[in-house]
View 1 (cartoon, rainbow, N blue to C red):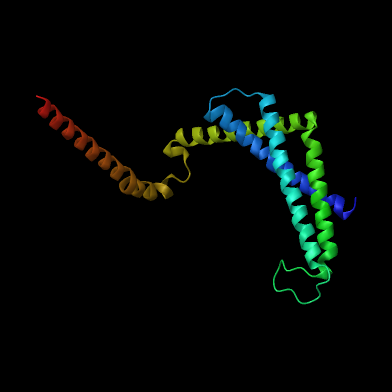
View 2: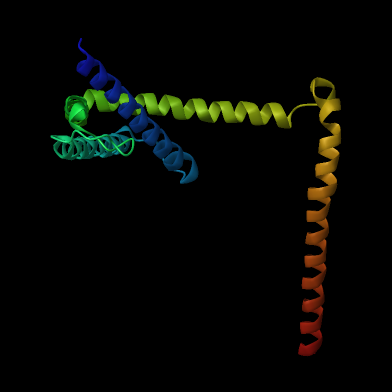
Length: 194
């Protein structure tokens, strides 16, 4: 494989990872936050849309690089900044545009590949389940931990006590004042009604 093919493969890998992450987030929101049921076909549409967004991004990059290349051609002065390209950059800009084109083309091919989309959805589902499992495990471990099993208990005790004083007790006090204020208003309204 040449340098361009390697860059295209790397770009496709990054784009599909981003698309898989988007699908994973859709799965988490759809099944947990919205109480839905996992439906592979629904998420295949999400995967296709995520790939489309990545392909459009690559196509836009190709267009920008082509415009930069055309502007750089024939310019031989010293550049004034990082993205102020000159004639000596034309070859590199052409290669980068070709790479962006290759990434977009491959992503558009993946959009039509039902097996690839199904695989992406399955990988996103596994990643979503892994996140849920990790969060549950961590929460159960923290909430179920006893002081004699926590190696940091003594070291963190002062911080927990300070948080209790500064945050929890103040919040409790504020809630009690608000409750008392509401009760007083209700009593005043009841007196007016009598």
